[in-house]
Length: 420
Ligand code: EPZ
Image 1: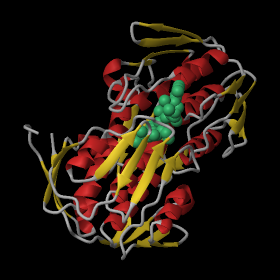
Image 2 (image 1 turned 180 degrees about the vertical axis):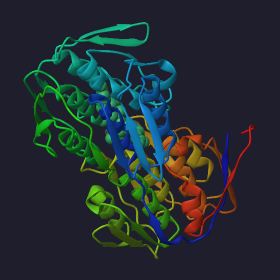
Image 3 (image 1 turned 90 degrees about the vertical axis):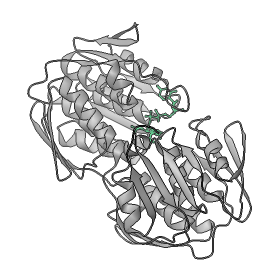
Image 4 (image 1 turned 45 degrees about the vertical axis):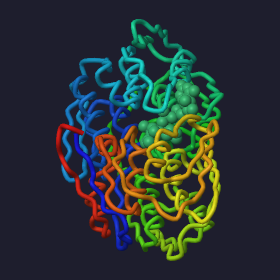
């Protein structure tokens, strides 16, 4: 397993190009199961999660090739409708194949995802949605066994706004007989892009971008090409890297409105933010003021930036409260940040972060993707050397993060080896 060795104290500066969105790609790839033919997904990021999804689709007979960030999928040879445990345990988003397999092939056998580093990750909304569309669903020996001669349109209301359940049910409903209505649908940009992609494939969807989606089922769909939207969480992570080191960062190839809540919070903390059409320039010469944040559904402050914000507030000039209303226990990064000298107290789903003058380097352990990002950010300013272990977590969601940080002036090296 690899680790990162970081010498803290460097101010970051310069331009960084942001890649395609992981959480859009992980929805667009299974959508290709809805039609036979060749699809091209441009601006696809090179990530572990993307290769995990590609290998899952390959077990079903999908051919895939990645070349210069263009992912080509050929679904003409699909001959299996199963997502085995060994894939799903690596990546919960594997469950996204359930809806398209049911819609196109009338059956699916998908392993229930386990939990993840920070707790249970239920899929009841996915399963209930498929049942509402007329599928028979049985849970047996850790697997979801679903079948339907043809799905039928239905009204579906989500008690909880769910990105994954919205995507899955939408991918099932597009080939159902009749019209479906999805209410309290997630409106994250990645779901909006999925809906647009399905429309390019021939689906009939109204209300895209709103939390009320009306879908008229069609009999067949066809392949399409798409340009994946930029990753708003990678963008936010690099903005925090600039802020925490009091540098000046210019993000390129971004959609600023996809992370406007974060931009406002960075301004509240004392940063100067300039927004272009596909760029954002940020500079924070005077350090951070404490700013409270509540992570919530889009367009609110994203839960996927909660860990990074706590790292930033760890060196603010006062106390801030960071609350997560999406995942109440997504705080595995806090004990590790405390080992770097942060002063944080957890109370249920809120972290009370008392800014300190200085963090000091130590060896810390990655537990999940965004926790790893927060440890790297803290290491950028911790005095001395910080070693972040098990960086395979970060490789799931950030393409060559150490190279991009080095190009901005960070002293960070990837060290390969077995023992850590
Ligand atoms: C997506 O996960 C993202 N993953 C997550 O990003 C992100 O944190 C999350 O949305 C919230 O924005 C992908 O898109 C691949 P949810 P998802 O269903 O779809 C509850 C990252 O770091 N819920 O919107 O799994 C759930 O427990 C990852 O890139 C149910 O109760 O999230 C949570 O409290 C981490 N029942 C809330 O809904 C269900 O059936 C939101 O979860 C489904 C979800």
